[in-house]
Length: 331
Image: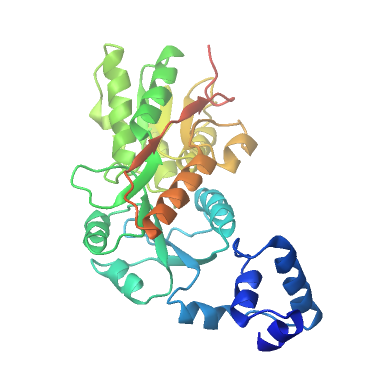
């Protein structure tokens, strides 16, 4: 840096700021210094600079999997959200550290913060880790969680309107003439419990009663959704609609219907949740509740960087909309 400063006839601090694209250095001077650096093969040692500034220039994106330890971060839902988060973070010239936590305990996040591997943390999904998130948030501010806002929540969250999504999906099935509608999903989890509440609300709005035997647990991974639908069919239980808590669960249910000789949507209409890439590519193409992944990612990263700057941020809930395709068309 001293050599570049001598050649350019400026101070070393000016070189440092110019190579960091600092706006206080005139553009012409920045361009000259950066050209000299390229000509002489000078590369900024980011690790040393960050250590000196007590910063890592890194944002950690962590996925706690207390409820579903076998779930992979290659899941289409995760990949889509990660892509948008990566775009937003990289635009701010920060690196990304991806952390998968398959067996979290109450202090996993505190240990991650104390490792000082990142300047801020995005947690993808509350899983069953609400108390652990609250525990970390008491003393650590640059933390934003993708999830629903809970009554005793300390941390800042950003998520979709899961209640309205569940209501929209079920209302559509009911307006299409379906009356015996299954709910499939892990209803004990934050976000999914609100989708179930929306399902219940829509059924009540149509003057019907919820059949609790139609509320079936199903994991995001594995054969549980397929098995649940197959077992109902084998027992001769009649149903004509399914609202699934995710697109993956919905597609598993459709495979179970097809293997039993049922047609979707002629016999059973199916609605998913997320609008993952698989939804439009499946056969039949999946009607689903679309989450605004770009908007969610932008809001999460905006909140996080505002918190890094010392600002307070409130939790945010983004709207959803129903995307009609072949698995549950209008009638």
